[in-house]
Length: 351
Image 1 (cartoon, rainbow, N blue to C red):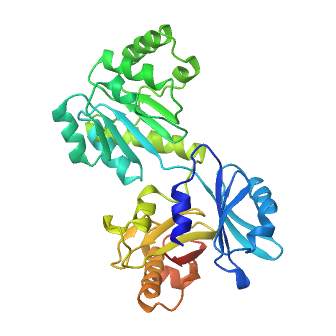
Image 2: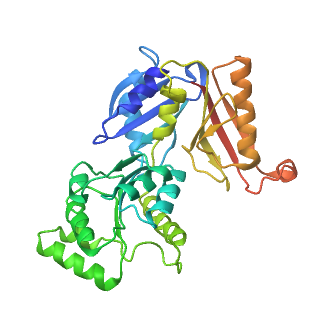
Image 3: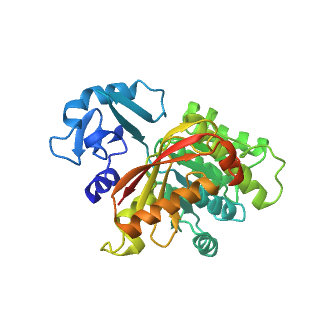
């Protein structure tokens, strides 16, 4: 299975990708990876996906953008998961507002890059946990940022001329979001200057400014919450998700930063959901032998039960995969304190 996750980690972000896993019969657990409709990897040579290739891709694509779920072909249930890319949060400026944005961005699963030309403030960003800090002039740093459909730009520099420099570079890049701090008057002046310099009008019209949701934020921490809340709103409106976060793939392929795997982990994926379960189909969580989890499938007693079963699989070595149903309805669920209703089926796989 390491080959599967390695193939997923190497997917070209410019192409469409989908993973599939069989949930029924003798083929249970067989996996495949598709790119632009073509089968590029499967766990079993001449497995079931060899014959299902075109039909499976077509039927999964008929679902609405961003949806994930079950496709039934020939009496076999197959869970299909469209892959996106990890959210990349690019913050221009390393001042007081950027610190809570960095921390919340990391908490919400983003890869965070900070651009800051002052060494002391660049160090503050590193201490806050940013994955990458570029301590150099903003324009020079932005030349190194590729951009993409899952790149979210936040401009919180210390001055008007730096805002303009950043915005001029960013509007030329692919992006999911551009937000800039500042008063309406200051922002209007910057936009006008960038437009006169040849900036893309559509990108400038889509600029989020004043940045952040209007929650009356005053302190840097409150402003950071407002900014990240707006980014989350934009992301969820687009319904762009990814099957595996970068952190999850790193833990599977290179646990603890070592070059050799020594312990098993269990990947938990919600494959069906009925009722008001807290997380959607496709949500994943990696359970480590010490009980540590990468990601969450909803928390509470439901997640605790899945973790318990996953740890049993690791410790007993009895089976490599299985389905776990958690019922959050009825008296038993109420006694356990499960505040959400609904039923979820979770696929557990030893990796």
